[in-house]
Length: 112
Length: 115
Image (cartoon, rainbow over all chains, first blue to last red; front, top):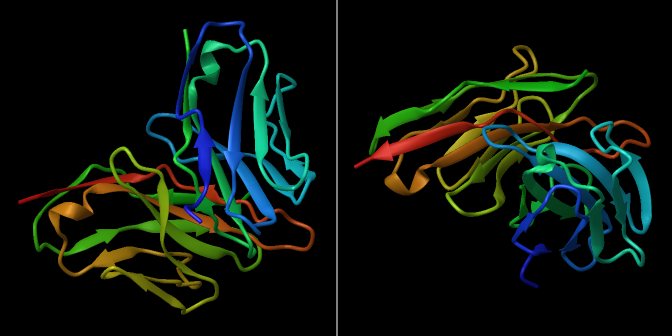
């Protein structure tokens, strides 16, 4: 297993378009997290899945954001009607144990 | 609420110098504490962790001790190398019943080591 993977690594889109990112966690990891990181800041929590259940969403996650983990394996994060303020690095992490986690390389989103 | 405060960078050192990056936290209960490192162009990597008071986490010559009395988890290394140049993030996870155990990060400290 090569760790957490994310696709795409970079995405450039125009304001108002929809985008979808994918995260493939380490196999057998039941916990999956999405974070967002802007320049010069630490990652901020967006949402959490335990298996296929989405158990927590941050207030940062507006109605334009939706995440799924349909079979408890890979996860997708969709942003509808993107805004320039959505430009950031979107990070996925997975873990088996409580606390911590292994991070993927991230998807860098640029909204023009 | 729970939060992490770490020293601002950049921290610029010469090779073989001693490194300290300060990190303090605010949390209810007994959090687990972490240091993550982000090398240029790469993703976040777990460097070390400690899960209870007085625990010392260590890896690759880096150490940090969980000090409950001072709510601190300072990162230290006795002799830095150019290859240690990266951004270092302090983080906590505050376990409680039914919680997600998400990570709360500090803002990161850029370390630049010069030959």
